[in-house]
Length: 194
Image (tube, rainbow, N blue to C red; front, side, top):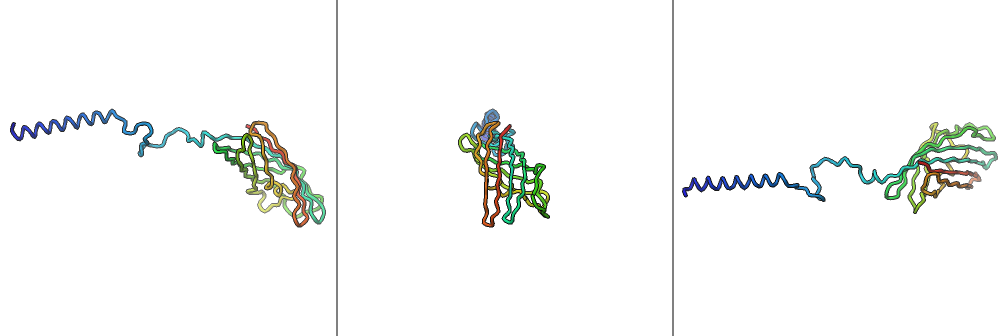
């Protein structure tokens, strides 16, 4: 066999092998199950954290009294409506708005402006079949206003445990006496719904 015939034969064999390899590669998945394609677009399926979220509605009513050390007192009723989310890891996070109900009053004249709305953050954890909840004042309206009836003073000290089921209800009285002789008292009820 002459040199050019050998070169032609080997070129043909190499082209045939390349063609067979390309054909087999086109029929094979380079990323079998369990191997992630680094250039593939993100999956459209929901992430596990989204699937694991449980949402509850939470309502709170609170009757409060602030008795001043110089005499006199202010009373107020508040109603909070909020949404809370419970993650698969058991963490609770939520936010709502508490609104002052009609009838808030002081038995003395006051130049201070009474708060009418309070943004409340709700945090906590799942503890068995109950939710352990805490509340934090985030903002109030009108700007610069005060809570004369003592709602905010007792709110941030409240710790609730409530069964994790629709219609569950928990109620708690709270009394705080500060070093200056001020007394804050409240009766607060929370309720879970869907």
